[in-house]
Structure formats: structure tokens, C-alpha cells
Length: 155
Image (cartoon, rainbow, N blue to C red; front, side, top):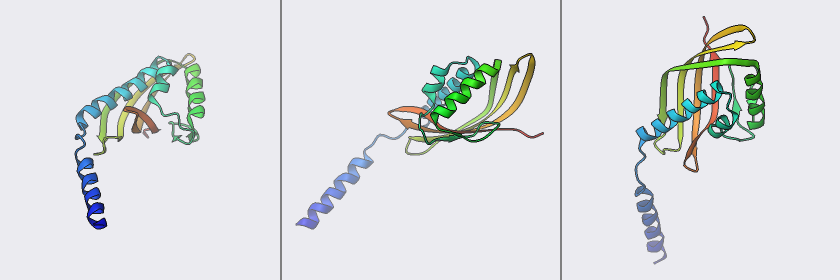
């Protein structure tokens, strides 16, 4: 009798788990694209509130900017972006070749994009071809960036 009860419980759990609605991958990709677009908008407008809404605030996250050492934790990232905002003006980012992939579970995604990054440092214009990789996680039904890696294309 005990075996039948255990098997029944396992069967019921399997049925419940398989009754979850399927993930709408295309809808998730649209939402993620919005997060990536908001990231760019937050940089262009020096909007730290919007920037913070799109990023995880984990103390142990590690990100890689186009220059310098790894950026460890939300506080270090916030400090770095605040400094970047003070150093740059007239920032304009054009993203292209955006590719977004969503795990079948619907709670993890990764994306790549190429940026044309233009800004002014004082009186000097800068233009960098930036390659971006993003990892996002859906937390409390909201997509946030949990890791990024940026590099300047050689050549």
C-alpha cells in the first residue's frame, strides 16, 4: 500500500509539472529586447534609475566592460557607470545584429549585439565598435541583466 501511495504521489507531481503553460519564447524575446533597448537609453540619457531597473543588484555578479578590470557587484557597477556619465557627453549608441536566445524554461536568456558607440570626452569625439554579450534572468516575472561582457572589435 505504501508503494502505491508513493507511486501515486510521483505520478501526480509529474502531471502537475507537465501542466504548466508553455513558454511563449517569442514574447519573451520581445520583452528582453525592451530591456536591452532600455539599457542603451539609460546610458544615452545618463539615467541611473532606469539603468538600475534593468540590472540585477547582486553583490557577487561579475561584468566586463570594454576596458579595465572586472566589475564585481552592483555597487562597483553603479560607481563605474556614474563615473562614465560624468566623463562622457552626447552619447549615442546604435545596436545592430541583436540576437536573443531564451532557455526552454523561460527564465534564462542570453543575447549578443554589435554597437556603434559614439560620445564626447571633453572636446574630443570617440567612436568605438563594441561587441556585447548579455545574460538575463527572469526574476519575479521581470527580466534583469545578470551579466554582460563588452569588448572593442579589433581592427
